Length: 536
Image (spheres, helix red, strand yellow):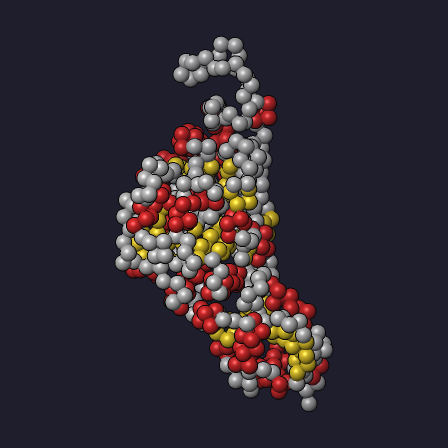
């Protein structure tokens, strides 16, 4: 006869827990065993990356894919039946980060009994092994305890967009999607989602739009951005399954035959002298019932913005404004919080790193004498154009704005290039942020001269990618592509600060004097940047 105390946890699952839930009508399609909801934190040691342990749930029971109903934490018979409860609650808290659509029920068991913890009421009760609830019983309890409306149930039951080839939402994306559609279906008219760059804001927005359209909760969508690259990338990448229903507003002309309109604020707002005749007035204020605002921390956040009038116009009683940002703004005259209210969900850079979906960065600061001490010309000193330089003290605030120091640009290019050579990382894709387009061009030239051997092999080794350069912009997709070798070193000013999806970068250099912060958009294993001023 088998001594139960000698049974492993896996034995307890196989012999007792799985049969107990199967006897109540749950099928293997209703649960996921050893469900890992994180990737495991990445650590970097001497430029070598390692993965930490993933967080795994013994059983995750679902009503359907959108609705996780219960967690079961199993233990062997050397432990009491309730021993795993604290661990199970911790997993449920980790999966929730929000009030809506959290995992509502947690169970612990050692195969002799179940302990149930109701996350919605806080109450616990002991159940015999043959008393485990059915799927329908838990679903009915969940609906009643949450007080879900018919509209909420309708959109909850609408599945995510998924095909064999498409990726499925990660756990935090599911939380963001579920909480957003739940709030919108419940009539909330201002919703803001805060997610760190690199965690899939646009993919999450697509799933939200898809489910709202499929369920009939929303019928027409306006997707607003302030950069062409953001609109184009959203349409051709994450929103591609809806492309047959979508159009991009061109030359201010709008076509009412499409369900989804992608547009630049600039296109819809028109010129300042077009008061009363702006392009957005082609449609009635209630034409769109969902307005998606990409990068909601920028222009539209300002009360007196030329662009805010678009949001004010499309703002009927049945219209929802849904904002996305990685960096919420809360300043006088420009506050996301004032407009949207508190974020409905936040997934931070720290959470992304802890979960292993974003890689940690390492900051390298290097001091240049001119950055520390500034620059003062000698009496009568002339610039490269033969003009006498104004006699005053120049600081980092002036560099690459009112004062260009060519030697400084060369030193930056040399430092970056030497770093890559020394660490045998010359083909690690690198972004160098510059003050403006002219600065990006000068930096490109300096990098070419520091890496002439590889430029000779392929001229695209170093490239400038800025909004005014068709050739450079044409290489953006190759820079994003993990399978494409070139370009490698890219200089830019503002184009790549807008959330462009560049998964391949491993070195990031901030070459902008007095730049305040640059920690919101890296997926790099090594990030060299200067949060206050260029010192690299």
